[in-house]
Length: 278
Ligand code: PEP
Ligand code: MN
Image 1 (tube, helix red, strand yellow):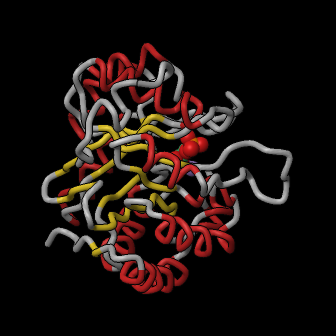
Image 2 (tube, helix red, strand yellow):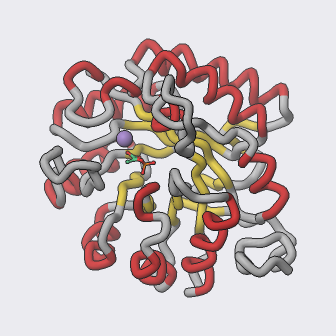
Image 3 (cartoon, helix red, strand yellow):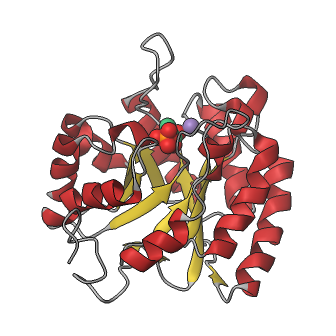
């Protein structure tokens, strides 16, 4: 048994954990696609983006209502109004929703609207938040801190698991290195490393690592080839008008082109495709 992490280790749990939201199972043979705008910015944009996401076969819609921005002067999200828009879209398109939680006090409010909660990279070691999430039974995406090792990430997952919540999906989103031609360096090797060390499902977010939409398809495909259980991709119907992360968002054409390519890669590595809810 390793010392840094325990509950997330393969020694502790021999069976792969499956995280389930309605009919969607993350961590099984099927690849799950989570897509949507970085941030909920308007009803019009969210509805139109959700339609593109749904039509092209994504399984879960993402969109931030509470954001952790590097600067306090940047747009911090629409808060509860954003959650309300997400839940409208959920009904309209039968898409489960994942949205970020940045404060343990917001968990009851967010869980009224969302099916899954995301812990962002900057909060991976916010142990008060992790402990509070451990007391819920909500499915959680735990993003890797961009300055953290795989073992520290698994130890962070332990905080949620130790509280009794087994529904944790890890998300690799790139780490900070000396390389400055991309926003972060996607640690593709963390995919086989995590798969070897842990029973938890793992998805990859190519968007925040790349920082630029044109790089996203290549690394999205690499992630599936490497053994990820799914992808979290930023998509926006109008990336040029987005207040947050527009540069890295795929537009409709790019997302529509990528999905059939991912199907091919998934098939080549013996994975199945998760059909969206109807
Ligand atoms: C996001 O998913 O929009 C986000 C802020 O990601 P990260 O926490 O990985 O930077
Ligand atoms: Mn973003």
